[in-house]
Length: 616
Image: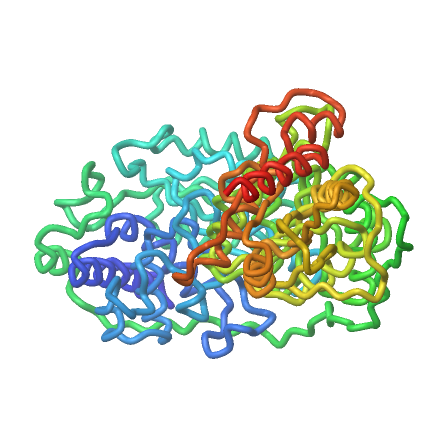
């Protein structure tokens, strides 16, 4: 396209953005209008993408980090022939594919859900890592950011990661339009302020004084594509609401349709129907063909003492040997999570994200989008930092595995800052998630293999200390199942446990048996989905359930058990033992006792229930 045609295309993108927001009565047209020239130049001259084959391995990747500017994206899709003008008019309406913020569930050309600002570039880093280190295909990752989101710390985690990895296949386009939602941004139009920050992280920086000058933008894109050894950021000075005098560079118009849209459209030169021929990428040979070999999981002898975190590392390594699509990421605690075992055997598929949990999850998201099966690991407590990334990954339909080690008070002397006590609640609340909590090494190994077969967000909770192996190597542990470890016709109470508390529950059951009190013990290793049938049967047989968990009472194992009785039938009597106090530093045994979740506390709780039942 000639310069004049590209400029006309930019005007069409502005007009269509105004039209969409006007039809919907809501939206962000002014945020779209500022970046219209950036998008027009990209689609007309630099993006390589086959809209008829969104799965084409050679396609460039485009991420709209400023997801509220979705009208601009949809307008560009229309110009590329992927959407019709009629569909544009369905923007933000019930059942429409054109949601207020784009999601992959609706449109095949959208790869990640955006809208929570500061996430597009971190995910783009994951995509670029896949392209550079694993796929080795010449596609480029383009990420369009807004200047407001540059205040997010997650964006700078991404900037440092990209610089460290020399991701020269990554280009960030920053729409520096000066205005955020409530007023001016921190740095306004000071391009150099942003450039200094990106340069400090090893980026090649290009400042475009007029972000609406087609030729100047084109030169910047060419320079980005020719830069080797560094990621590139193009910082373009733009005007919010560009082209409409009543909106241009004016405060108070964010997230609102343009007033008098007919006049605004006329001012921009009227409705157009230009078509842009986006370049189709050349044929690409996929170099990361996924091999599928026989999986040899580690085997343990009953009675061995092995930490579940150790079994995780061994099982993940074995899984990586059998499956070439499995990749591992860690937040600089691989010696503790045991992810380093994978790194020693499969270094080319191991990604060190350092102490940057948001970037850890974002990179896993990007790798998943590119067809890999990521396992991202950190302490359970620290994954809470990345909750918004996990939430957005779920919205985008991403499949990934997250593993939190050092869960609960059982870690001992390190104290509460290191204890994952809220993680089960966090992951149970994520849409479509799977939450698993093994109690021994054998179970852990099998669950690692199981979770790799699932879809959506999968979470595995592992423990720091060694625990006895209680299951044989031929046991199976389907997701959604449980194991009844003690049962008899005389059971007075059912104790439901998971992880470290399974062993405490078994010790309590053995002690109570010597006193003539029989209890049923259920290992509820699948916290979500929960084994409703087994729990209901136990409730019918014993009349009372006692849950014991190394987690806060809210949102954990006890609440998961209650989910089995949410169909309108009366729930059984339920007593919950959980961590209700604020722990300090102490030995693991002291921690469990102080929290009231050790064998002694379980036995005491059962006795009280039995005595109360006799009195009644």
